[in-house]
Structures are given as structure tokens and as C-alpha cells.
Amino acid sequence: MTYEDFNAFCRALPATTHVVQWGGADVWKVGGKVFAIGGWETGEPSFVFKAGEVAYEMLKEQPGLRPAPYLASRGLKWIQHYAQPGLSDDDLRAYIRRSHTIVAQGLSKKKRRELGLEALC
Image (tube, rainbow, N blue to C red; front, side):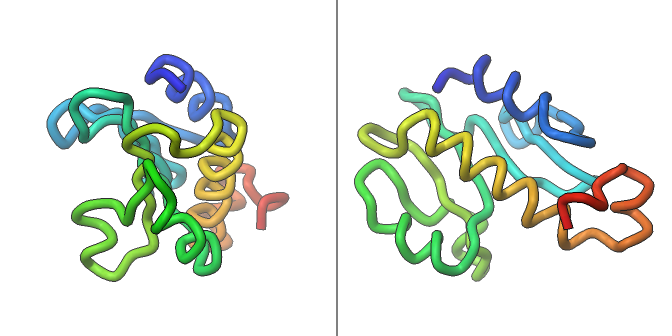
């Protein structure tokens, strides 16, 4: 997946916003909360997403994937796709979509209603 593909995919998810921060990384948010980051690594494109407990345990040891620097060290369940083989583009999109849902579910009911995200939760 390229950064252009990543940004187009994240932009198409409901109620998302984009900022460039942390050294030029593309940071995608829902309800003001981060759900995906593109960047943070030199060389091959690198993507970070929030994972559920089971997915985190499955993914953290796979080649090309690791607990996300800074985030996982604080006990958070975030995965970084940083090298090949990593995930297929389809699988990466599925995990980013799931990350969006996990973060949206953590928003208040009022915020989800304001953003039109009731169906996700």
C-alpha cells in the first residue's frame, strides 16, 4: 500500500479528519482520536493502527509487523506495519477499518451521534 492509497482509504471512512504531525506523518482521527498513522519510518511505507487484544497478540510477532514504537511501550495495543512481507493490502485495510471502529466505539454516545456513527457501535 502506498501513502496515497492509505490516505484515500482513511478519507473514505466515516467522520474522519486528517492532520500532518509527528515529523510529517499522516495522522487520521475519528472524533478527535487517532485510529491510523502513515509514516514514522524511513524506507518502505509504514502504517500504524490500533488492534484488539487477540489481533495484537497474533500480529505482534509476524514478519514485517511489530508493536508500534511509543504507543505499545505505554501498554497500548497498536501495531506497526513497517516492512515486507507484513500484511496484504486487503488485510491492512481490514485492520485499519477495525481500528476506526474500535476508536469510534470509545467515543461518548453523544459524540458518536453527532458524527453519525451510531451504526458502528
